[in-house]
Length: 476
Image 1 (cartoon, rainbow, N blue to C red):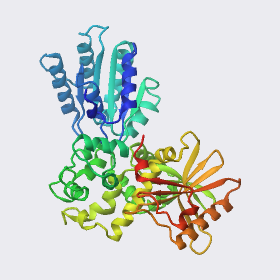
Image 2 (cartoon, rainbow, N blue to C red):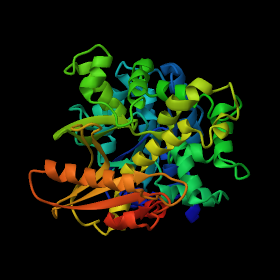
Image 3 (spheres, rainbow, N blue to C red):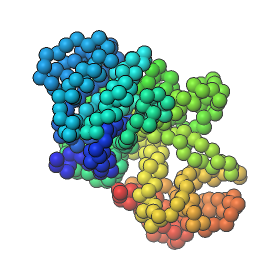
Image 4 (tube, one colour):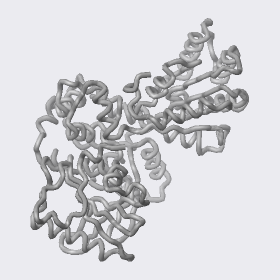
């Protein structure tokens, strides 16, 4: 296997290797956001050499799913396909096929998009449970891998539930979007050699999702690529948003409505805010279940924020593609095929890039800690707001360390080194004073500038303790 075929994914591969080394049955769940590369990871790691592989199809009837299963089993077994009346019979047929192999031989079974085989009646899951508990769980060299995009389904039905799979799952492998550095490595592997600022600009719209990134064209600029992918009616991602949510959630419009509301805000909303928007009470189980499902599937993220000394949990959009789509694409798609290029240097685009860069910094906080030399120090990361005074104080990101030091991070996405003016220096000093006055315990404060292009050295920059640049975000 050539190195470039699996950018990153080192920990995931090590876990697969560990599972393969064991002489006991393995039930491995590979999960993560749709389009993140779960199937590619499994296919590439095993070089497409499976004892049996089957893929569920979205919204396909059970009888047709069973027909596909029968045909795939016939393909692998080199026998004529036979009708299957239900999933119980299907798993017995799989059992008969696997029994043809020597018990000492590793048998790799891969079921992709497993939730799409469950039509809601529970018949598939019950048949699968019986197959696993009655047969597979006694086969020491059987490795059964299931890939799941609907992470909420996985957690509720296969992990947290108390049914037949309780404590049967031997390994859970989460596949996450690429980091900035992995995105750079992936683009280089497909002959796209962009400046790191261009990579960040692209990341703000597509995130680190291999399926989206693979469509980028080397001969187009980042903005022109986004125009083609999302605003051109012939673009490969033109209808992606609707399909993305429809394939994961029943009544997907309700989930999209929550995302719409959250994406209108800069820092996110509390569960109470979201419930109020939906006309529900915060204690309503339907609200919490939807928020949990969106978090499980990688669209929302919980994070901490301090407002006037009170800690709150906010929900903010964790999916850059969704954030960009709801902010810009939905209202302009199909109208102007060069929309995003025409927005270069406009206030709306500059504002969006500023917001998105803040979240990139939050998501890359481990890289920032590494640049600051504090990777080994336990810390909490949050936003901080104090509304006292005429204008109030907002600190973009606080790294609150257990060694009694707090890094107050001012985040700037400028096209040249950030220059602190006299007025801005007083503003930064005011933020430090307000933060220190609000702390119950004494601590040292370090003013930290996170600036894409660094900091211009002027007399007003003397108060800055540390500077983190865009290049620092490109690290493991």
